[in-house]
Length: 486
Image (cartoon, one colour):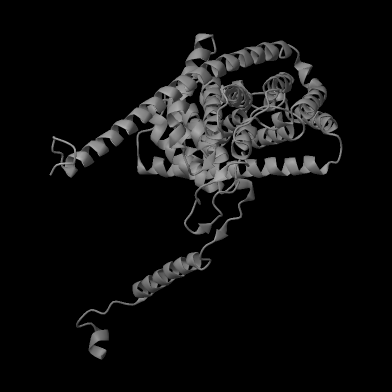
């Protein structure tokens, strides 16, 4: 057929083909531009976060190195908590808590908008807390600093809310990767921690770029990391896998207790109706008393204890040490102290792993390494990044077993988290109903079919009873006296 006014024939099929080809070219052009855009932006965030994290870690190392020279440095905890609470309350209330939680809250509630003053206030408050012995971590401030700087960058570039949130997520990944030296786990953590049971695939590429760049920048400027491939990982056996699964259950229960303890201490702090900085003084004196009672092992980051347990050498560590660390951490973060929560989670996981290894019959170092990853998975609802962290820190041999324990701990912990602002995107069991799209702190799981479990138990009980009856019946052989009597 010919089109009017044209000397060249063109079929409808050719026109349709050209139309679809044009659409494909347009699609690929847009996708290429998007990849290029986020590669550049994420690299910038990674550089900025890497430099900021390096500065923070070096300042923290210098301050803790100074105060550790004096055994009585923990006596300054009341003053440190007072100053931390005062600066946060008066200058940057968003800097309260353990860092990462506030960034998650900002992403979900304020499209990633973070006040610029949060960055310096969080940095100083955390250094003061950790240098005097407060039981907290260093990753939360790095995530908040990375997210805060990314938010400032988004404001300067006048980004809309969607791109702003992506950039702030890149800041989380960059801070996590740079502080622990785990670029892959850090990258996944940023996109996994926001939603329980969901991963933001559209932010995956920029998160990886930001995490890798940040890690390389921090390494270049002299930040060193703990890395200890395990020398002893048993060969696979059914018994070993069952022991690892049992350990996953125990770590899930330990994470459950820790989350509930944090909530209880936060509730206690809210019920004490005094000025927030005065609460800091109370919390500081409480930690001083606990230190005199149980020793200074549970103060600060506790990195030496983590290293000892991962090497399988912690002979003087009592079995209940992880419970004491939970108490020290809950007091610190609920009564004015500033810092992260993941380093204490590592401490708790390795100490609990050492304790559980004795009656599970597992190698102490192996169980401590699995405990570190499984506690992170259970407390933060991040089984994927926790499993990847186990591989990055301890080698590939432990990976499959750590993944099993991480997933089980993630399930056993239930619908709760150290990050209350996480959004639920899935239920952890098909037998439980939870409202999707709400913050995990508001979740109230309910049984879908309350009679399902008893019905299964009843069926098993009936089957067992009928089997026992059949075994109890005397067998009658042909030609026997019993048979002839019939």
